[in-house]
Image (cartoon, rainbow, N blue to C red; front, top):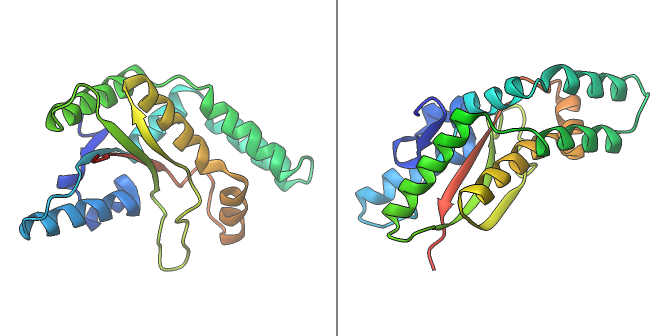
Length: 193
């Protein structure tokens, strides 16, 4: 499961390539505040390997490249390109092992929170966030008050899709990043009421 899921309390800045800047920072914060005896809501992150498994299992790479190439060649608009790519993600099937790992982690998070189904904030964390030469922070989606395994898996798909917002596509193009080199991690963090 650790190849697909990582718990926040085990993450630090060295894990940015695997879980992105936001999730790695949450891990650092949890560890630092725990030492000061301050409780911070827990959670887990899907990994870059999980994102890449989703892309591979749904045969998305060539289709993404084709849509981007058509846009780069001036054959279609950025808006149509982004919509087409996001639709691929939203309608993609979650690989069985990833779906099982997310469901198991969510069940464990609910147990830790002592509720049947805990409400979570679901946040995108790109592996290229907050680099010295470019910042991708704030370009992807987040969802609040997500409850239940099915809704969490849907939110994961929506986060994956948001790696290809029009803004994110244009920014990567401007910065010279390969659109398929950046991966996305999804963080699920308990919401305390």
